[in-house]
Image (cartoon, rainbow, N blue to C red; front, side, top):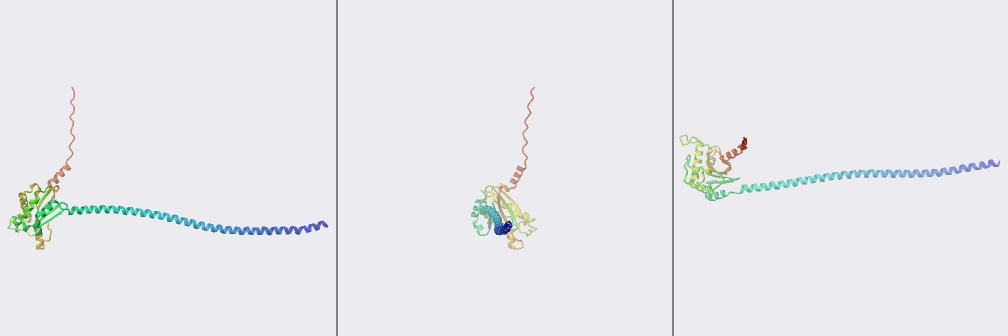
Length: 283
């Protein structure tokens, strides 16, 4: 009997201990769950920050790469502009040199302008020079009467002054060019066309220049007739300008003989190599 009561008393005691332990474990589990949830939220927040940081890093890298490309493009453009500036500087120097060469007058020009200053001032003679080519332009009425090839006193005096300035010129070809307007010559006159008239007048001027000491090897005469006008033949003033004598000083290498000589020299075949005579056989 006593044994059964002991057992009965022991049963409630065992049940009470198990419930207490369960509650303790349950509370511990809840605490652990709460800590887990908190850690999970913290990990999620960290992952979010890490993702944002990674995105920011990628944006920074992209921005740096773009900035580097922009810097390279800017440097390339700066180099291009520097090259263009150098080219512009060289072009400016070339233009300045060309302008100086165009504006520079030769000694022949200065001497001729000085000796003919009165005629130039009076508008009887025009003098110009471009790239080493000097032109003395004289109206035909100063030199010749209408339809005539005989020099007037006024024209002869002017040509003598021209000759004095030209006779000591070296390295130049002196070409006298005759020009007329388009009015036909008198059919009953001395010349059949303006060709003959312009050429004969050019020859007359050449002869006077030679008589005044200009070397004949430098002289030549051309007649252009009416076919090289400098003004309209529709007006009296235009026809007057077209009737003229031009004395052209050009580089000597433009002379036909110089051109032909240069062509022949260029085209001449190389001399054949000398043939060495065969040695005589010994007997």
